[in-house]
Image 1 (cartoon, helix red, strand yellow):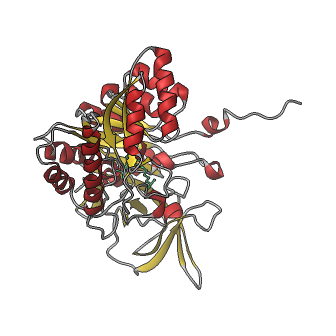
Image 2 (cartoon, helix red, strand yellow; image 1 turned 90 degrees about the vertical axis):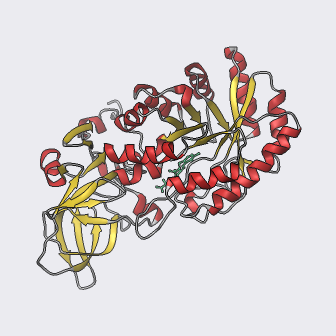
Length: 416
Ligand code: LLP
């Protein structure tokens, strides 16, 4: 459920007509709904209410400061993968003490910064990373809280680019090797073992792979207990899917209930790192049709948003719903390819979409709140779009449209 709905034949974002947003701020533009973000966060937090838990929103999904701030105000924790994301969390009023630091390539300065800020835990992805973290913590005279990200070797059944829990993926430590690595970690003077974590992939539409992973991780936790290594928290990562088309992923409450059943009365604190399921359907990409170009083979609607603004269709062949802001009741319905101005054949946001279109129409690309703006680029020297947040009947610019000066500023020609 989200707060982008039609009222009297017009698309609204909460209580604001989307056409009004386009008039005021131009297109293309990302539009987020505060109420939707809050609703999705609560879906997790409320379902977990009976047990110790922390919902660590995966910052990478949408790292706009206002998005982070809305979640921080609800008491969210955060999952970060760089020192840059840590700075965002801090600036947005988030609590580093509720922040877990994931990622396979943490640099020394990033570890230092995270230790100084007092992050909740490092999700360590390799043996060699343990050594580095132990050294950096030693230099600072502190103990680094550690969880090992294990790779449980389950098939998440999702797109290969976003599947991470298989043996052949670069992520995590093979679960079979994990007890030995935990023992090494336990012997290091500047580390404190806190937890175990896994993240098996993204856009999962069934709970089964999560439960398979959980079962394997629980066996590991028991093995570790036999070695006097006590695990306090279990971090199941993110990955719950959303409805882009006809997928019917479990609701966060179904997912959490299934996990809780398996956990029984174990005293583990449960950490989750949802990104997409909080942010995706809390955002649209608003775009305008520039030209209609009908050839003998295809009907193209050339829109002002492109692959540089939203790369998911080009990169993963992702399908995102594209709907008219003000649907026409008349005119011929045709199958349109919605393509951007970028010079690549892969520059499309949707293909074969049945729509009644006229030049100048506004369209909304749905489910664009996650992995949308954050993956945008300046390809073709296009300014990145603004990000706007609707809150009831209010509109806020939470990142203004980029200017050409900002793009070109850091560059220079060779000396004469
Ligand atoms: N935790 C870790 C360690 C992750 O690597 C990820 C996502 C998450 C949490 C959040 O997963 P989510 O709840 O959003 O599924 N760009 C791709 C998605 C890449 C996901 C990467 N890792 C896309 O647009 O589909």
